[in-house]
Amino acid sequence: MRKRWRSARPAGRVIAVVLLAVVLAAAGTGIWWFAGRDSASAATTATTTTRDVAASLTTMQKSVSGTGTLTPKVKQDVSFAVSGTVTAVDVAAGATVTAGQALATVDTLQLNADLLSAKATLATDQAKLADLQAASTGTAAQVAQIAAASAQVAVAQSQVDSATTALSQATLTAPVAGLVTTVNVVVGQKVTGSSTTTSTGTSTAGGSSASGSSGTSQGAGAQGGTGSAGGSSSSASAGSSSAQFTIVGTDAYQVSVGVSDSDIAKVAVGDQVEMTSTSLSGTVFGTVSSIGLLSTSSGVASYPVVVDVTGDVSKLHDGISVTAAIVYERRADVLAVPTAAVTTANGKSTVQKVDAEGAVQTVEVQVGETSGQLTEITSGLAEGDLVREVTYTRSATGSGTGGQRGYGGFGGNGGTRGYGNGGTGQFPGGFPGQGGQGAQSGQGGQQAGTTGSRSNG
Image (tube, rainbow, N blue to C red; front, side, top):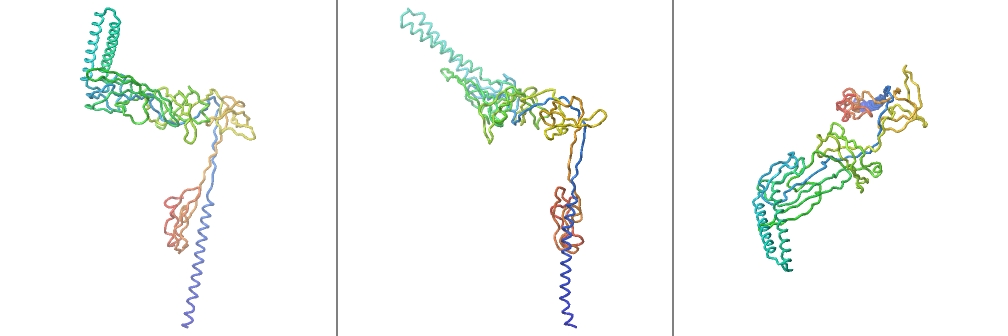
């Protein structure tokens, strides 16, 4: 009996293992069955929306678009034209100034001395000329001396004029109205006479426009004499300025946009431009002021088109990014219907016309151009005719019980008493489901699915 009992135990173990395998296989089958059932439960539904719209007259236009940044049309770098020590700074960065308003002042001690010296030199030269003229008997030598003395008087007068101008420039004033963006001087600082530069033009999005510049330079003469120098300066380059003051105009703005090589032929000076921005509540209007002759290339060749802003600029400021639509063709009083109301097949276009009693009939129409969501009707309809617009909307929905709820996947492979991990999965086209749990008390089935956790299907 003892031997027979010992031989029976292994057979029982084999049976238990077989049963366990069957259960596991069944659990596995259950996983695939549930997964298949979840996938099959997905459904795509189509919603049809209809509305009757009247054919109406509208304005259709064609445009090309580009992006750019608004910049002031006028920018001036302003510096003292005379040398001296700064005695007053009257404005700070961020201040708004008017044309002619004082910006800063340098001391006038040296400037006054230069002017007095120039006047003294002039008086001496004038007296010398007068003596030569009084003593002249008309000889050739005397005539030459008088001519030289006259020239010296002219030089001395020029020096007096220059010194007088330099003294008047001891107070630096704003050449234009605008916003002061840079102040690079402080009281007590010694400055050297330089120039005032006027810079215009923009450099954004696809190229830069040509800019003109002008400037003047006036220096005071040294002690014991005076001197003057005239000159011009070129336009300041983009970037930070080393000028003592920088003023940007606030009453005129422009933007440069890049237009592709294939579209530039459509654009002309004077074309109207409509500009929009996330920083602005409405549309900003402008006109094309210039078109660049040379293209720029950053992968695609484009030409810089400069647009001057027209109308109210009170809400604009430097640096606003805009999308500019350059309108190169505009037609008014065009009969149009929604594009969705037009059906085209085999070269024939039709609409569903609705009569006064609500009856619908198919009417053939001739179509023209399409702009946005509208299509031009050249024949077949009249203004006020109702046409039916049909809109189809598709949506995908799904439901199932992968695990306990949702699509996180079935519980672990343990089945009723399995040891697998929680299922992971996401239903295609639907939403993540709650993590699958074990069918009963499978050890692994208690773990939530990693993909579909915490969201109901």
